[in-house]
Length: 315
Ligand SMILES: Nc1ncnc2c1ncn2[C@@H]1O[C@H](COP(=O)(O)OP(=O)(O)O)[C@@H](O)[C@H]1O
Ligand SMILES: [Mg+2]
Image 1 (cartoon, rainbow, N blue to C red):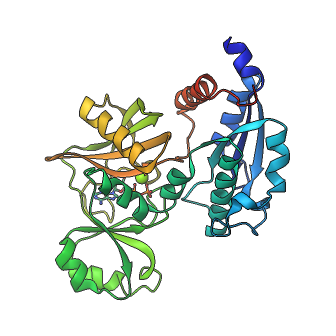
Image 2 (cartoon, rainbow, N blue to C red):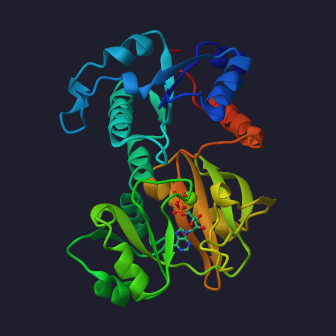
């Protein structure tokens, strides 16, 4: 029965091709192919830029994709990473996801979750609606100065990119002088950055919980690292030296990760949680985390889940 369900499944992967193919894209492809599933990789750069969500892509043809959909590629993974892709490629990816869903394809993730992936402020608003503990967040614009943010958020506070990843551009600001200095940067006040309450950890690691379709299937911890050489350990980011440690999430933490995934509409998500004296706090959602060597198990779990639960609608 299962064998039959697999036999017609074909999978498309949207990604941002630059230089070497990312390890996880190749690994996903290999894992699907091991199960005799055809996989096509589509470079989002090659999708025409004529389409836009505003122009109602439901009425526009996407020749780059429609041929494949007709050939039976009905399950699509969006693997365009917020940490690296340009706004242009991100928009092409969102348009493709929107278009594919009206063609009755299953997209991982759906449009709303993809949008939240590239827009942390939108993700914050979604989580607020579900009363999820998460740091208060505002967009930084030139209209509001250092004194406003200092009085609203107090110190320390966090500044980060609205579209980001890998901990790049995440700064902890300890005092008004530093805040004034940072806000002199035109890029920071261009609307592309956020200010956030600082969530003080009370452990020396954070946690990441992987959720698929409402099931919290994996969890691990990341040791916290300091920035600016000040010996204050607060950031969980493997890109900045955090080490992965085993961690079995509690029921409360798992429920929180599931709720955060629901709030942004994600069927596949990794949720970063800071442990505090007032309980777990969601720092962010990662609907498209990059997987690295060492995470083979998780990629295999995802592939198995997709094949088991997302049968090809052609049948
Ligand atoms: N508001 C915050 N309070 C405390 N720590 C934070 C806050 N925001 C981010 N961090 C720390 O910085 C890390 C990277 O920030 P994050 O928002 O996850 O950005 P990225 O998308 O680059 O991973 C988080 O894993 C967390 O450890
Ligand atoms: Mg993160």
